[in-house]
Figure 1 (cartoon, helix red, strand yellow):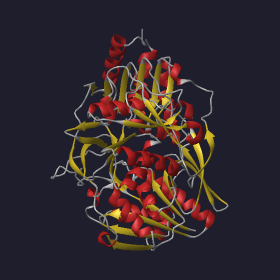
Figure 2 (spheres, one colour):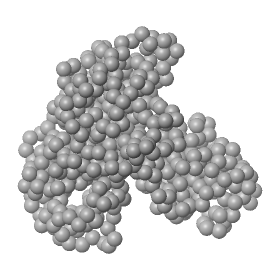
Figure 3 (cartoon, helix red, strand yellow):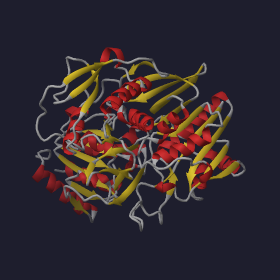
Figure 4 (cartoon, chains in turn orange, blue):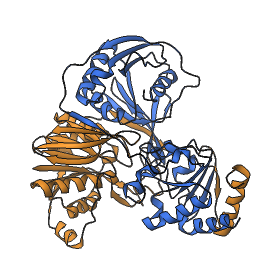
Amino acid sequence: MNILVCIKQVPDMESKFNVNGEGSWYDSADLAWRMNEYDEYAVEQAVQLKEQAGGDLTVLCIGPERVKETMKKALAMGCDRGVHVADDDSFKKDPFSIASIIAEHAKVKSYDVIFTGMQSQDRGSAQVGVLAAETLGIPSVTTIVGFVFEGGKITVKRELEGGVKAVVKLPVPALVTCQLGLNTPRYPTLPNIMKAKKKEMLTVPVAELLKTSAVQETKTIYFPEKKGGGLILEGDIGELADKLIKILKDKTAVLA
Amino acid sequence: MQGGVYDLIAFANKVGAESAMFLVGSDGELPKYEGTVYLADVAACGEYNPDVHKQLLLEIIAKVKPDMVIFCHSSYGWDLAPRVANALKAGQVSEVVDFVDGLPVVPVCNSKLRRKVAVTTATTVLTLQAGAFSLADDPTGTPTVEKISAGGTGRIEFAGYEYAEKGGVDLTKAAVIVSAGRGIGKPENIAIVAGLAKALKGEYGASRPVVDAEWAEHNRQVGTTGQTVSPKLYVACGISGAIQHLAGMKKSEFIVAINTDKDAPIGEVADVLVVADLKQFIPVLTEKIEAM
């Protein structure tokens, strides 16, 4: 079994964001970086599949030098090798370009199963996985919350709205995009973190894999206007509680 | 019928476009719409099969030759749209919340930022965030129906549905809901939130990460994939306010948010945002309410 998991490094969403000089993206200075949350589930499922079926598991990440830190976490979770597609301008790339890079890498590797997150937490297009699969000509299922590999076939649960799930079967090779809650991503142990340092990390310049042009561009990025203008209360906790109780008495019937 | 159909019509109206609709449904249940509906029979292709639905849609697109193809940003839309976009070599913009100066606007970083996007291909594919576009008046009109049928079976086999377990608490009937988000930090702190809910004679709910971590049961989950609620009072504790959560609670009559992050998107819908550590603040609040 030859497995690929594609991950992205994103800022912690609790960060204080600023707009960059060009007004085209958020400023990357002074941010704490981590693995895209959806991708943690993708890595965990890929590692579980490898543990079950044996084989080789590659983690791929596109971005500047710093993304290697996030890749090391995936290696410590159980991936065998890393492919770092070096690109200082990855933040400017549209989903189509990112998917093309992945497909260009994957088309000669005969992966049986490719895992991605359902979307990234920053750009949130939810397109890259499906676009890569369509480019490769393999079937794909999005937003999975259950994954079983048995008898050479994949059975997944696809999350729909209102608590309903569709059970879907598909042959390999295939690509699945992972939703939160799919599994419980493991914490890398210290011995595994040490082992990860010795694993292969191949760096490929993005120019070698990017054969397409962008189909969209960001015109501007900006902070939304605060709507509604709700009241913001700050200060001493006891006083805050008194203020809130008074508001609830005035504006709602629940404390009457 | 999926409620989003009128969001799509509202968007077409907003951009002043001529439109046609692709619908998987039945004659007996058509939307109120003045235009052509290309209707695929729900009995024949109601179960979503990406290959089959993509093919159906591409045939209609070849006939209608639209400048824009729009979907709801739902489990259906975000799955099908990129397949269609790829086949058309069209740029896709996902989860559109606004349309300004002829360009779609989308959220970035959990709605902390907005991005205006220009597509450079002849055809544009969009998915619309639920509720971002809505009709000002009740929908009217009777569509002209053109029936279409699917060939082929696709590579993906549908094997059935699974439904959430019924029973337990019914949040939709609660007058007060106090919900726990990721900000509660650890499962033991559910008790703090449940305590406030009890003092307010309500129920406690939870956001998705809390349910995924199994700190609360699924029937307490508020949001797109859980319950949609509209209580008299909703208290969001340590909930940042992902759009999927907001969609499930923003119609509440009065909303209080308790959060350490003053810029959290939950502030957009909250009537009152208390900037405080919930672990310290809620016990004090609960005690004062119980003493009343």
